[in-house]
Length: 118
Picture 1: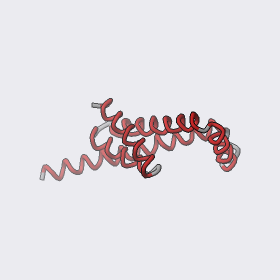
Picture 2: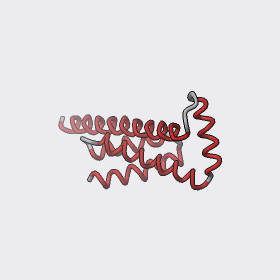
Picture 3: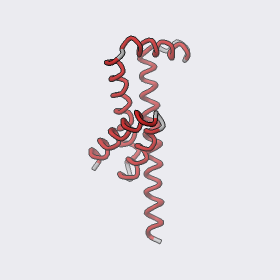
């Protein structure tokens, strides 16, 4: 169940990120947490992490000079952070967004389960 949920979160995060922007990954993470229950934070965080890593890699393949220029600007805004630091920070933020969304989904699943027992 873990691997199927991971693939679902990854694909849903990619789709929603492209369609809605970065906030769309929260929806994918909540879905992953809801579907898996306990441990949903891990599957959601890994799914969003891999989705964002894939998008970063895709951007490097499609427009490497533009991505490097953007990372230099963002790095200079963040106190002369090197390019790999900008990528690492982006992936860490994605991991945390996925984990928080997964925790929310897990809690929603617990609440729904308790309400159904009443």
